[in-house]
Image (cartoon, rainbow, N blue to C red; front, side, top):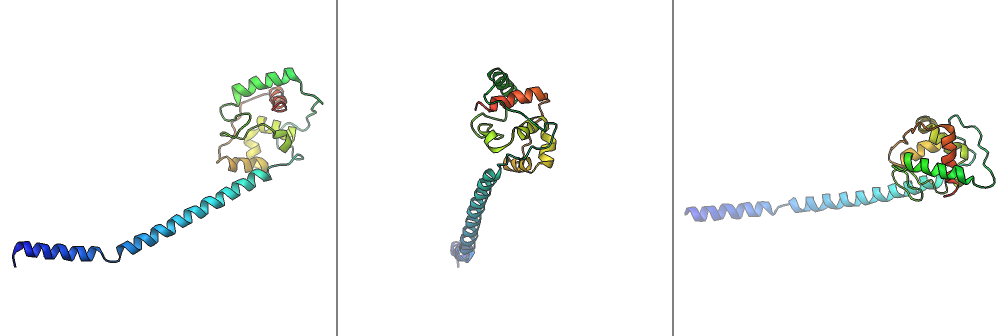
Length: 167
């Protein structure tokens, strides 16, 4: 038998061995993995939707220095303008007024939460995310991105709250 014939016989043997059961394992593994990923994504989406719907509590005042806020019948426009400027300089890095960004949109926040809760979240975010159930849920909903404490005074937080009433 010549060297060429031996080489051809060896290559034919390798080819037959390579065509063995390996493709079935790859197909089966790929099929199961793809199916699992789709199921997890769908479950995560449902959980996220439920969390956003469940965050509505107008009786919760949150944890912090603000115990009572008296809102006037109408919006104090001067206070709202000052609040808008404060919001732009302190909050816009993470919040957009009317859409979800790094943090939630403040538009309509007073339909979901009490004024005291909003002010305590602005003034006392570290304690709120540790002790308040809504703030804890929000932290989870926004991928663990905690709200930064901007060191605002109670008067500045009240101006921002007044601005939120205009959104």
